Structure formats: structure tokens, C-alpha cells
Image (spheres, helix red, strand yellow):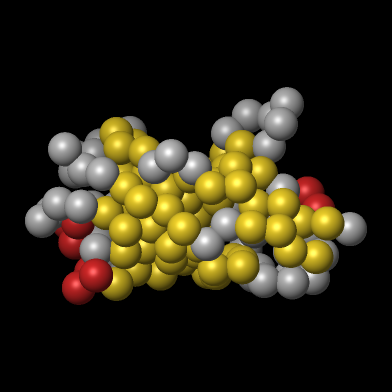
Length: 118
């Protein structure tokens, strides 16, 4: 079973930046698609970004150009660099591991709070 440990959340002013990290256990990390999701109070969970084992990245339209997802397979870690943060980015952010075959994310981190003040 894959376990995920997140870090990097916190409080930041609008226009600032944060870098989230998610360390994943397991020897098959390099073969998996990794994703970042977020959920704000009263809103549905949404995918922020994903990165495949081959390094292909996918971003939600509202985040494209501001957020960057990357991975370091040697460290079994995925990152989310968040720039030009807005109050509407305030949410709990989760990292997740997609199943090897298919589109379902089967392992999830505990979530880390990101709060952006006006």
C-alpha cells in the first residue's frame, strides 16, 4: 500500500507563493501518475494538476500558468509550486496516486491547508 506525506501548506498573502511537497512510499512510484487536488468549503473537490510517469503535465484551466507540478522519482516526491496565489485558491490540498491502469486515484494523502488572505 502506498502512503503519502504532505508538507508545505500555510498562510500566505494574495500574490504570494507556496510550494507543496508530497512524499510517497513504494517502489513503483516512478510508474504512477500523481495528482494534486483541492477542496474548498462548500465546493466539490477538483483536480489541480497531474503528472504522468513520463512527465506529461495536465492543469485545470484556472491554475494553468500559475501552478507547476513536478516530480523527483529518486526522492519519490511530487511537488506543486503555486504562484500568484488568490484568495479563491484557499482550500485543503491533497496529493494522490492514480491506479497503474485506469483513471481512478486510489491512494490519498491527509491533506494540507492553504489559506490565501486578501
